[in-house]
Structures are given as structure tokens and as C-alpha cells.
Length: 159
Image 1 (tube, rainbow, N blue to C red):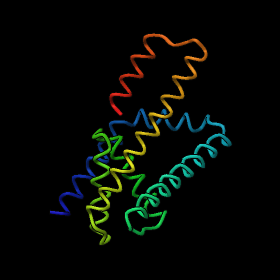
Image 2: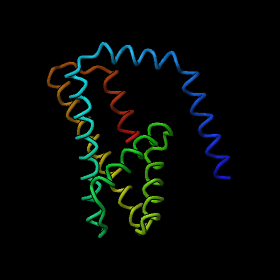
Image 3: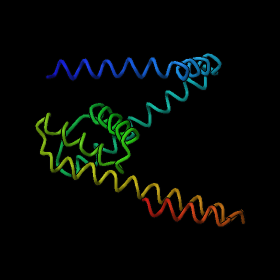
């Protein structure tokens, strides 16, 4: 059964590459035209962000009495972020990934689920702070329209 699943996944991967070959060519042309310094800076910033996310998870884990390395948590957080983008489940797909990985590593799945949910809550609070700061900037510049207010209320409702 595992071999059949692997064959199906490989076939679907090849199909995606073949069907989106035009998009891959566009990405390749864009990368060829990219300024190498900015490209390396973007990759460096992305790596810093992943490590920062791992450190944040480590802090939450430590609060709950769990111990895991920053690199492992960064790797799981990157995978969870990918899952949350591909399958929009308000972050719960990533929580399931953390729980499955915890079970595999021998950690209590309940504690890890609480840690991931707590991280998502902190992430939402940070988003609301940035949203409030953005609204303050728009109010200060006297550039706040009904569209910005309705979009902000919509994003607040989602958070």
C-alpha cells in the first residue's frame, strides 16, 4: 500500500511539473533577471524568519515543559506553514502536523497541540498589533477611507 501511495504521489508530482512548465519557465526567467545581492538577502531573511519561528516555538514548548531543538522546531514550523498555505484551515493543519510529529518523537500530543494553538493565538495577537499600528498611521496621515476601515474590520473578524 505504501508503494502504491508513493507511486501515485510521484505521478502527481510529475503531472504538476509537466502541466505548469510555463510557470516554471517564467520563474526561471525571473530568477535569471534577479539582482543576485537582493536574491541572497531575501533568502537570508527567510532563513532568519524560519529560525525566529523555531525560537518562538521553543519558548512556547519550554513554557509547557517540553524540550526540543530550535532546528527541529524550525523545520516543523516551515512544513506547517506550507500546509497552512496549501490547505487553508486557519492554522489547524499545522497544529495537526505538530501533534503527529510529537507522537513520533515521544512527546505528549496534547501538550504539543496546546503549544501550537498557543503559538497561533500569539501570531494572531501580533497580527492585530500590526493592523492597529497600520490604522494609526493611516489616521495620522488623514488617509483613512471606508475601504480601509471595512478591510480592517474584515481582517479583525478573521483574526
